[in-house]
Image: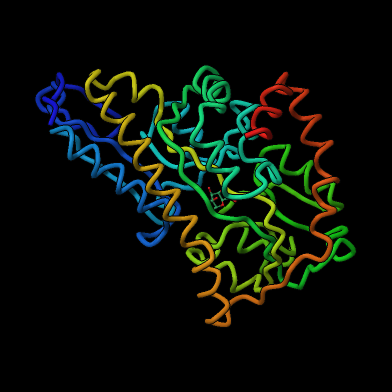
Length: 325
Ligand code: X1X
């Protein structure tokens, strides 16, 4: 174990005694889910790995959306308040770093092998650099591995049924652009408003991965799941740059190693559990699954949108490098 660094206060949870910060470092994390979700398990793993290698760090992980949703977390991290680390969809960080959603745009990865090859390389480094520079958010690892499909209150089985389909997408403009290119009617809605928005008929569905559909019981209002398999999730484990810089150097190294290892653990876990969770929901009669007829057509419809987005960011070569992985 490494020796504890100098006395330091991190986040809001550091305890002041007689005007001097207590010796312990507290890092506060946030999860939108309960203990069963792969994101929570990955953050617990991260804490364990840090703890095995460094004395004196306390982890304060808040679950079940107690601290809001990812669109809140991104502001907290950028400002260096309320939370120190979390797991976050790149498309929920677009307002601070417009290029970051390139790494989780729909139809980016051909399959799990392509996704794995991309995440085991350093091809995403330019996007990480922009996120740190513009949002002061540091990526310390990558988890994810869920496959996102459509979930809707009525069946959506082909392009005719997708036409004009009112669906929620994440906040990044590229998400709406891609689903609009598929002739749906997308709108950006906060994640914690999706359930009510479907229930009240404001939207007819959204898109998500099995782990989160099951954890937050979205099937109660949207039981029809269409296998569009449009995204394999990339979910950075992120830390506020303001927090990271305050850590002693030896702890920074431990955090980076633990982030990478927890990410690998989380990717294996969520990709392995994805089909299992889907089947559990089918067996429980919670979702009715169907294939999307003519799924192969969709790629051709979105590639020009992806190309235009990358060109607007000056990231044409980067997109080509990801596609070539
Ligand atoms: O769609 C969302 O906003 C969320 O969907 C899942 O719960 C996760 O992928 C999460 O990171 C977020 O993107």
